Image 1 (spheres, rainbow, N blue to C red):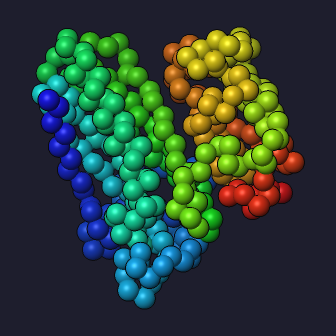
Image 2 (spheres, rainbow, N blue to C red; image 1 turned 120 degrees about the vertical axis):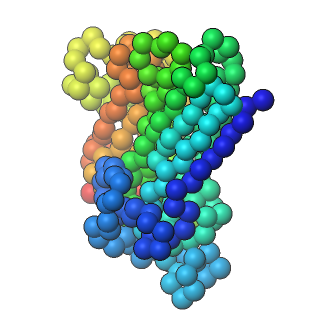
Length: 273
């Protein structure tokens, strides 16, 4: 049986418990001791969701560090995010924690499966990047690294969350586009172009190669993504589009290249030029 022990550092509002606050911004990585740079958009929520009576806005993004042990064979230390203006069990905050808890569970399962892992040598770390927080959506990417036993190098993993602040619903990449539009083909083509420019000719595998068919025009291949004010950001699993040495690479596509495909009335329609 795997013992999952969680120690949360800073479980309530900043200013009272020392939790770091993160302002909205594109690609801003939370750092310890970072103060609020600017106010986040005043997105209103129902009064019963507000942590502070009379202040029914989502507040700022707070960085928390959770750490703990996994049985006798491993440990983890991961930065995660919470919206400070609403309760911890609010659907928005639950959505932000879910990828972290899922990755911890996956790592714990791997440790159990690997009976040769020496005690105490399995380690999972992770950091969160806020790509966008505006008055409509919150986009976050989690980057994880895990190591166990005598592994030569750590293994990268990535998870992403895009939350509609109006509905508290998770947004998938298909939800960004007009139904029936050829967005998978366009995104696949533009992503390959950008990856080739970043990594060089020959670094990206051909279509149909890789754990999840690489860059084929399939929605599943682009399920890891983020949005910024200027770009669609695509992330890929290790070995998905190229050799393991590439880690979990990134491709970006500017919104002007997706005009006519992105739903102008959808969750990111306001980002179109």
